[in-house]
Length: 277
Length: 212
Image (cartoon, rainbow over all chains, first blue to last red; front, side, top):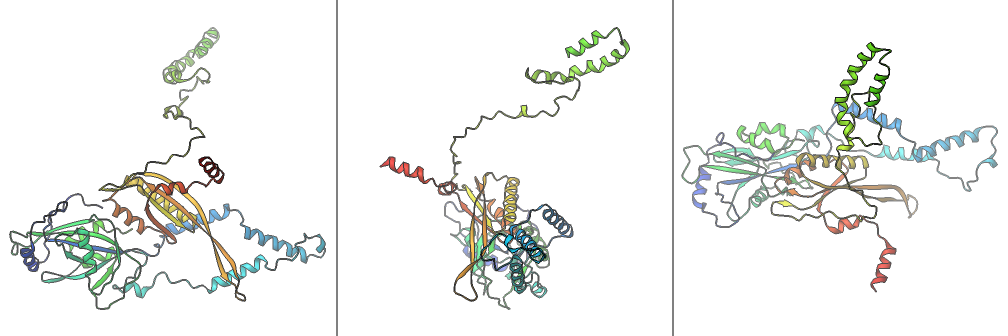
């Protein structure tokens, strides 16, 4: 999961004249001790994940096994207090209705309990019928890619459409690293600077979870900027669904759907650290 | 071995052929039984016939453990402190109403730590806490007890956690968290350790008297 080897530069992202323009002006050696020497060609995207809300459905074998285990447990189990009470009450009723019933023989309970166990059960059944659980899977919400409520059984990743050079690409939301801040702070800034977002997230640790390097096409390369290093950070979406804005260019996608949106070289690095458990 | 040879010598006159046939397996047996012969104590019985005698013995291979005295107070394990690259002793606390789910989840965490090579210092359960659910009666203003819910806790104590491994670890734990189970990761303190013991009011009273 952690990348131990540096990736060989693979593929070329779209040309980035804007990038190169900025790097000429703002590039300067970082003087802080304890900070690594990053050039401003470092970018920190944040991999914001929405955790699964409900457990995934069992496969057929798992369902069969579950049923079998349940049956075994039921057959091996002992009667509970409530069930014992039910049996006692049923016995008492049958004895009362028998012809040779003598009420003096019964143990004096004083005031007979008003609530029979069967009545309690009926009351509980009624309450159960009144309770409407929410639907586990809603087909219409599942298809809406912008909603954070889709596919409750899977974990989703946020994708934003951002301008990289000339084209608009679907990427993990990112910003450029600035001097004097740690990589994690850059990633946090990337999250807060998303337009109309208001996502609240908790970052998992200070260490990045993935790296991607790419070289700029030869036409734009200068002495300063040959390429870009991309450090990915993971974050978990905190509770509280953000207000949905229809025009915001965000998508919540599952890992299997990532391939449709990301470039192949980028996708290769990203899918290494996104867990699809 | 000696009784076998004595038997052979005694009945040599009667059944020479049969005994010769029986001798060869007996002669082969001593070389196999030899290692067992050396390690047995005088009082143990040895069945001499079977070549596989003593094949299942394993307790002699275990290291000798000092017998534990009952009077030993429970010593607290050393609490590791955080360094630049690793967290110190952490408590992963799993709690919920359904005991089977909580236990299975804590077992899953423990197995996961073993697989990743994270050292698990301790794995214990805290006493359960009962919560009474009181509902208002429909006709009156009194509340009555509707249900009793018991919250179970399980704690997996990790001695250290590498800071680079932490995001991966937390990610997997959060993604596999079952419904109805709360997960919390905190640092372990001595107060946490002492909270597990029962209070002994008489002892405390006596100590207070002594100190006065």
